[in-house]
Length: 220
Image (tube, rainbow, N blue to C red; front, side, top):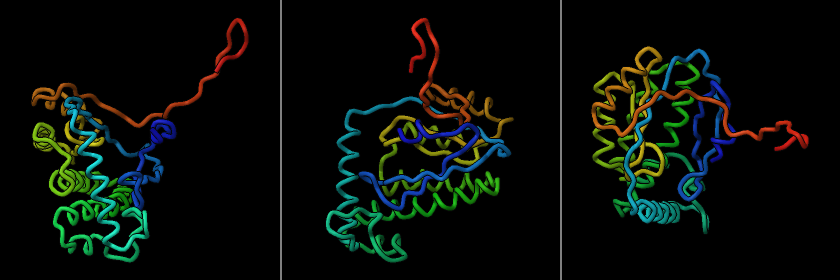
């Protein structure tokens, strides 16, 4: 919702999730990207009623891991002090909490690396980071779904730099990174692979208040 209201046309948003809101508190880094020729093919599709309960479970697991890793009372993973947090998380005695926390910390590092890749116009490196993010969401955070995994693989087979599930997970949508020249071809390939829909997207302005005149004066 914050992104919808604050996005700017031809800008991409790198996410710096050093703290959490439920699991992550996201601060936006706005990166000018007019010279970067990339589009996103978004795959719409699946929804599961169990998703909300499973998401709340992940929230509770993140909070439990934060407490074990030294966050202050009521703190979140972003409040865990010190360095090498992903490594320390991986050493937690509970393997499930270790996986959840490791993903959060590694994803935070990937966000910073993705911002650097965007600034450099390095779509190959950005694609690798997107792929690594999906793998973490699939194996450590366990919020992907086989149908989405199959479409992510189809995107990669058809020339995407990278692809990952988006949203809260457990189905839903994915994004794939490609060039302007390949975007329509990739979208068509994803539809053939079983996507309910696949379309080319480009960063645009977020929601804005619009004022217009009428018979009774300006309205908002």
